[in-house]
Image (cartoon, rainbow over all chains, first blue to last red):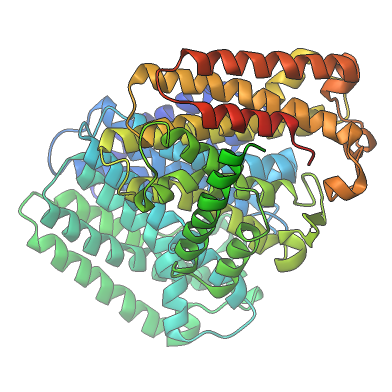
Length: 295
Length: 295
């Protein structure tokens, strides 16, 4: 990871962590529900999405404390999706990042409700945020987040993924799943940074294009890691997608083909950054980090 | 039911039904997910919440087609909550309104995802609505709906309800559950009508006070019906709360005491209506309908 990006992460990851946990801890809600919400928020996520949002924002102006709620809301959506995806009727996972999953710890009912409430809280944080100051920008954030996470976005992708698990998919079907299940929320994160900055519409659309490429880079790399990763590096058994007979990029394109596709999308993302009129060097580093990570 | 209220329901219930189903049918999402969302939306709900919203709105001006998305969004939240509450790990209900529950029909995974997506869709509809035209009014609708339905509202109430099922509760604990599990969304519905009308803040607060009383009337009446109702009238076995050993108003206050409490809150709600400067006769009728219904 580049020194600048490392410095950026070291500075803002604690701020994101604090914003997430302090605000959720302050909710007036039954203790069990709050504990279940906190448990998954504190489970050691890398905060990729809020940090991506803040990285885009800092292309326009320095990040301020007031930016954290709107930028962190996407992590609530991401966390709720993990809690629900882990449920027995979905992916049926007992462990996540070395800890029992939410429903193993709190029971299924509390896990479902914690996920439901985390989703709602995300929308609260955006509308109540002091930044962006403009009501229109906050409305657009709600609209974009709802689109990215709802039936035409993340949830649609998860549904298609569940239905596709036992079939061999075409590349087109696999891309539908990844675009929506993972890509839409990463795209939203990039877009949200520019909306918090109240950037020009043209910039917002460039960040959308960048986010789409970054989402593909993230997912293709994920599939490659699943083939190549070792047990120690992944924190879960590698090759788990294969055990589940899931379609992946390496399976459809060969490992070599998947790596070529990864390089192609990194290049496309760099091209989009080249079109921007602000200093995007931190995003070039972010892109490299996502494309070259080993877990 | 008063003739005016019957006429209002006959006019706008079909409009609400149409708004809900046409807009969900138009979503670009995997077929199973859409079918699961549609199934519960079309399961014969009385649309009490959207109709309450529209009844408040029409105190200010005639209802227009453009009002339907924002006014109907609350029904998406209500429907998602029923789908999730029926799940095996929650209330474990196989039947609702004479039909198999969502997870019995589509499986648990699809039911969880359909609920998740219905929640998201509610927020989309408000921000994308043409009415209210003001961005601030739409932001306030999102904020109020998130508060009413999230961890400090409906979901908090459902969590407390699940935890309280096997204990005998104090009246205070029972009121916490009802205020949040049922009351908050009814209160939101009343408030939302005034926000769609872009009414003065003082009026919005009066509608909030009215909504709180109406929510209590709804729940106390529900508990009384559960004791008194016959199998035919309820469409489910009466006394089902008793089977589950749930605390209810009649159990804590006696049936007579619950009826007195019902009359008290009807009176309080009427007092609030008396303070309003617009013609609230339709809401007087709505209140009577909620307090005197037999199913």
